[in-house]
Amino acid sequence: MLFDLGGVLVHLDYAAIAAEAGALGVALDAASLPRAEGRARRAIDARAGALGCVPGTDATRVPSYFEDLLEGAGVSGAARDALVARLEAHHRDRNLWRVPFACARATLECLHGAGMRLGVVSNADGRAAAILRATGLAAWLDVIVDSHFEGVEKPDAEIFRRALERLDVAADAALFVGDIVSIDVVGARNAGLRPVLLDAAGAYEDADCARIARPGELLGLLGLGSVGEVA
Ligand SMILES: [Mg+2]
Image (cartoon, rainbow, N blue to C red):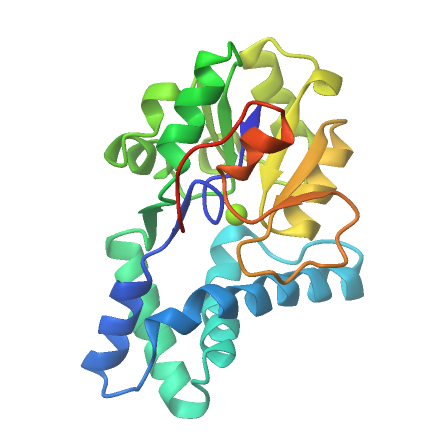
């Protein structure tokens, strides 16, 4: 079983984003950010749909992701632009995708205990393994594939093939859990894996694949019971 990292095992540090807004005197409710991320994800899909491919790279998509996130949270105009610049600087210094979902560790532990080989495939900037170690999630993972070191990003099938080869698992025996349709669901299908969409924001009611709201729901999907969790 393969997982995306950002938006699936860890999420944005919403409190840190609200603190950056506060430092600029911008009113922003951290509680509005998870749902606003749904807007940011769908904006990526809309651009990909219009162009026939996902535009740019993970690095070039980060500023527009922050723009769409803040618009969704009610911050626009000059305040939005100033806050995006501040978030970009913060993210360069310390990756903002760093807070593990409350159920992520227990879910990985349960899947590992069930005998599954586990890995991460992340469009990232070379910091995926460090985030997974810092959050304690790396302990359950057999492979971590960071696009920065591979020279290829999702939705290209090649990055999934490399992860599967290192796990020694066939594509048709694997699941991939991701949070953005045009990158993760399309990518998984490109490589022959069954996609599962983690839709924490409830933004993808029209999804044409399995959909869960948090990592722990994966256990129910696989008939492995549940973990006591929230968030
Ligand atoms: Mg993601």
